[in-house]
Image 1 (cartoon, rainbow, N blue to C red):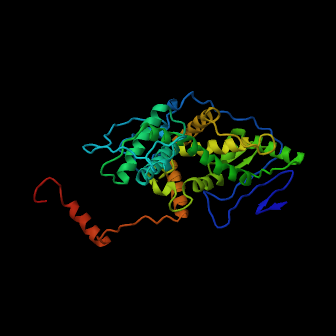
Image 2 (cartoon, rainbow, N blue to C red):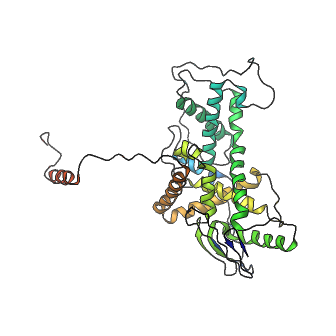
Image 3 (cartoon, helix red, strand yellow):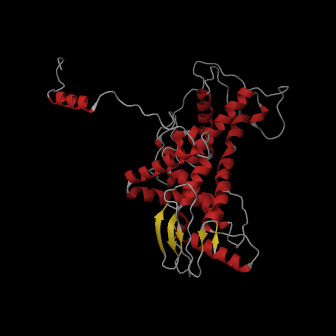
Length: 373
């Protein structure tokens, strides 16, 4: 049976997914399904994120207020003054200036404050994506302060606004929204990528249940190829859904968060990959009954799963850190190139190859120890 470029053959099914005009890490994925005989592979997760030592692929540029330990879910904060010698302004509400009722929103404030809040929200969300998807309350507080300060610096506020408790709570509340955005995009891709079909027919529901079981056997959904009969897997993290999800979440267009805030995504960080894998696994589990049953992405259900993926990714990275960094860099570069963002400017030097060769010969005659040289 053929359906939109995908072919299925029974009893052994081969599955290929190819998106017209695109190339992911490798755009094809084979998925052969027969009798499920493999024993599920489990991973023991630590009890909290701080016990995971992730030597993460770090973003190209770290914030001046953060240390590389951010990438492993821990934070070492160097405090900095928001205003320095400048005075702080009090954020003003729009309209008649009265405090609005109900949940705080950016629209409650004047245009300049609203612009500052929205920018700070994006910067806070980037920390969720790239550093730790489930930060504790202390990290949330620190990241909110950092995001507010960074936004003020970026918008060149001569007299910055103070971070009120109301705005602080507004920004912190975005952690669930940030994770939810990833899940929403993953849900769109999971059905079409793996071949789930929503139907009332019993045979199709049984097929969906079998597919759900096979995919969650030993994190098989993350592989390019998996044969549940032979219990063989190849191509870890080369399943095309990852490249598609990176583009959908962070590089949808040239104004997307991955383009605007490049330092958090270049290269793609291991905590980012862990969050994507967690979201995909959550969406696969929504098919566990044979029909799609959407479920809220709760921290209580998914934090341990996220930690386990982080641990797996750290072990993967240790196999060849230099090569893994190149892979993660390639993930970023390919997604950015397809976003429509401008290419990086390349500055060429003015010394010709011959001139450089002459300079090399000249250096061979010098010791570097005398003034005349």
